Length: 309
Image 1 (cartoon, rainbow, N blue to C red):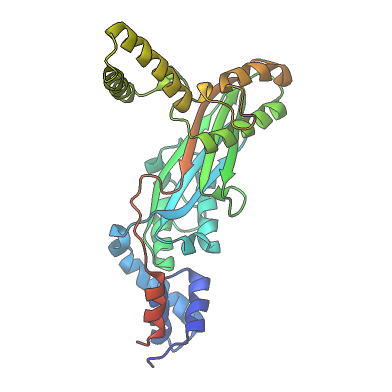
Image 2 (cartoon, rainbow, N blue to C red):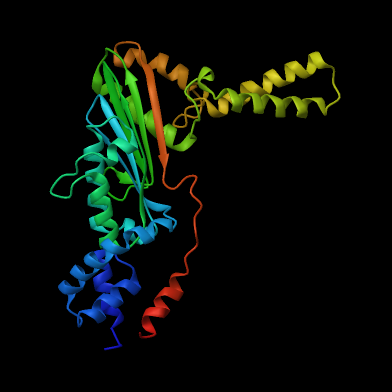
């Protein structure tokens, strides 16, 4: 049998999330039997999972989860956005966040943690998921924030369902004040972090190497003006203040009102919360950042399926 209807391939792909050519081959090998084809894809995939490891995985989902005083972020990458829309993939990422909330934020420790059910560790379950869906996947990173007396607030941008999306943020706030008010503030700050993408909490937290490089660049730019060294020094100081305002969370202008510095916002919020508020930390995951993406020719893939064996 060389011809498999495109509609049947589409149905199997929607059911499993596997690649189009893999779905077509499964249907050919199993005389168009849908359930047998699903089993075949799983069995064949286990042997092929290792071969997929070299393929670029820059799509997928970020998951965020908080239980009040502790929050986690997890990023699971896949090769295509199509897989990210697969219910099975989404359920798996949600389960990863459930496991991660009991961990320490280290991604290697997460991989070795027990996965719910009978699939062994998270790494074992991931191998099974790769074999079922037919794409390379990478549990790339995870992070955790935990506070003492306070809350860890969350925000997810480009949400596909609650807690899953493309940009996830955690903000940890400590205060002895009202926790509902504190969480409301934390959610606004998390939205700000998603939009403004600060690189450090305060000026003291800026990477020294990054700061030295920036100072050198600003100094060279200032010297090009031909002004005396004492003027150049003041010029560099002024430009560094602007640099800090761009990358340090407490120095940034709060995006929601467009006027207040975040540091001043915290001071003013003490009245609503009922006690001073301190930012313990923040984490922002943007899906696929830093991963070189490969453009796929989806039209060519469809044409290959429609073209027979």
